[in-house]
Every structure is written in structure tokens, then in C-alpha cells.
Amino acid sequence: MMPASVPGMAGPKSWERSCYRSHGCSVEHLRTWRREKEAALRSARKLKQLFSKRRLCEDKSSDGEVEMDGETAALLSEEEVSQLLKKIQRGTEDRTASMQLLRQGLRYREIQQKFIRLEGNMSVLIGLFTSNLANLQMDAACCLHELSLSTDPDVVEACLPATSYLLTYLSGHSVALMELCLYTLGNLVVEMKAVKKHLLPQGIIPVLAACIKSPYVTIQESVGYVLSQLLQSKEAPAEIIPLLLESALPQHMLHLVCSRLQDGIGPAVECAWGLHYIICR
Image (cartoon, rainbow, N blue to C red; front, side):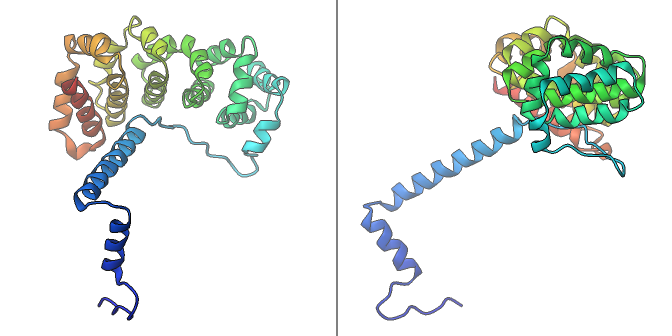
């Protein structure tokens, strides 16, 4: 029940009407203003969601292992960051702990900038990524993934030499590594036109066309994520969509939207967004 108005004081509705009258606003004007505001909010929410990057790696620290916080990361010098990578490269007994600290550190902008400033660091990291030691390769891939989440153009540009290797491992046998490489690529293509120009000649569209045929739902969803990121770019109508339409990707995307929902809705959602961007362009 609405509370009764106190004599001498305006009730809720009369208060609102008096506010509108005092500002000279008509009801129609207020409705228009409200519609425009709601449309802007919906657009902002959509952009924030669709252009957001995704973190796939999560550290699972064991008992007794030290986790790095932002304050600790900020205090690390370039020399300490370099020493951390050298310990990993030399294969010392604390390699695993050093790799975990590096992964944690690369979540912070200060460490990312120090890391890329040191000459040869990215080459060493890519070397570890192409190692034949599965655990070391996965840890290095997680480090690249952390760098791909950066919004700093210099950090993203530093990742460009790794893109060809990320594409190469999409034809591998490790589902976990393939998924990580796909999300890393999806994060990178959002930031810079240079990344897309680097990836298109390397054959990212044919590679994605092969990956989407995977029987694994996680890979299908990852491919859909990369495609939705690529297709939102300004370059998509002229440079990406024509290549995509020449491939079998649209048919596979439509198939995932229309079937196998019992296996998971993720691939269907991602591919639906991709098809939406193709049609809208």
C-alpha cells in the first residue's frame, strides 16, 4: 500500500511532476531522453561484452607457493625480471616456481613493459613456447596469453613474432594447447590493425576452417570467439569477410548454430555472433 501524502507535502507523483515542470521538460521530451539514454547504455554494455578479452589460464597455486600481487610486481626491477627468465631457460631446480612467478607477474602492466623492453626476452619466451617439453611449452603459452590480455599497443606489438607459432600449434594434437592458442589469437586481433595484417597472409582463415571441424566443443567455441573478434573490426568488410566467404567457414558456423546444442551452447552463441557480423556488413 502506498503511504498517504502528508498535508502540505507533495506525494511521489506530484513531486516528479513538479520537478519536470520546474525544468520546462515535456513528457515527450523526457520519454525521448530516456529512450536515448537506455539505447546508449545497451550499446555500451554490448561493446564492453563483445570486445572484451578472455583469460583462459588460471594459476592453481600449491600450498607453500608464493603468489605475486600488484605491489610486489611493481617493485621488481628489469634485472630481476631478466634473471627470472634466465632461471627458467637454464632449467634450474626452481624452474617451475620461476615460471609461475613470471606468469603471475605478466598480469601487471609494469612487468609487461619491463619484460618487452629487455632485448631478447620475447625471443627466449618464444623459444620456450616451441620447446618439446610439454609442461614448459604450456607454461610459456600461458605467459604469451597473459601478454595478449594487455591493452598496451607496445605489448601487443611485441607479441607479433609469436603469431606464426600460435597458428602452427593449431594443427597439433593437444586440445588444451590449441584452445589456449586460439584465445590468445582472439585477444590479440582486437588491439591492432597490424596483428590482423600479420595473420591474414599467414593463413588464419584456412587454419580456422580446419579447426572448426574439430569434434571438441571447446575448440569449436574458441574458433567462434576468434571469428567474432575478427569480424567486428573495421577492416572486416574489405579484408576478412571476402576470404571467409570463399572458405567453408560460414557453412560450418551455420551448422553449429543449428545443431548439437545438447553438447553445449557456447559454439552456437559464438558462431551466431559471427554470422550476425557478416550479414550486417
